[in-house]
Length: 368
Ligand code: IPM
Ligand code: MG
Image (cartoon, rainbow, N blue to C red; front, side, top):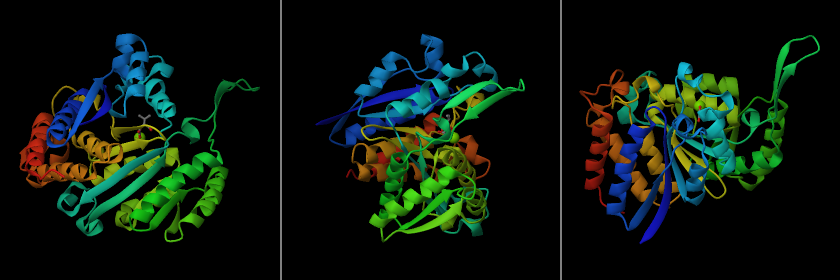
């Protein structure tokens, strides 16, 4: 029997309640397959800060170091609450970014997927959605403005200033582009390269490297789109895209826009892949306004389990079963309140009900 070690970082806000559903799913996956998960819960984010004074404490680092993969919930506090934590210890700067850096998780996969049967969740008109949306954002995750040199001070004229550098070297660009080309080759053989080379030097280097990398992928056609135009085109016709690749900050913004196109970031799990370790997380935040009410949508969290099964543990077929089980909850007419407003769900259900329904459906699907 194979054992996979998974560190569980439930985090803040709705994190613990959606993580509970992910754990239920992991237990059923164990029962259905010849595998075992060794689950190690650890404190992360603001919850960790209030308990230990650190948002990424040593014990959590040790649990993550020892794990084969990391499953993360959500982090973050309301604007008011976040003032109780010094800025550099906050859940984002103190925990999430250091974790990305530590495991060098440079390739962030954000699937933007809405099958035809769920098209009613999108605010876009049915004729725009057509047969559904199925694209993948590949976002560079450990470079650019997020990790560049930062300096603050007072200039000669006595004004406060800040310098925040957008830094990339060719190796960082090359490796994420290879991930994107590999994926494009497996999918529709089209890669949309998102950049801003009419202004940014970093995009000029990015595109030079792209021309070097693409030589190894003659079957993939590259379409260059400026990032601002990409934002417009995503609204006008998201179905024209398949694999999109971009630097860190562009990816942060466009992936949230895609959440809006789907109808909710609650429909976007993600995988953050590094050379030796990957972590999996919903693309959405911790929704402190609804935390503890049992109404959060666990789809992105459970979807992150599906991505972990496929990408870290080679269980693509069971991952596909899980996707099918999750979607069937919606197509059977159930949903958590976030999507019920827009969709035609007859029955509004709780976080735990959603998880239970996924389990019942998964249990009926043949094991791989
Ligand atoms: C995301 C989030 C993070 C980011 C925050 C929480 C630091 O918005 O994963 O998209 O900006 O990368
Ligand atoms: Mg974001």
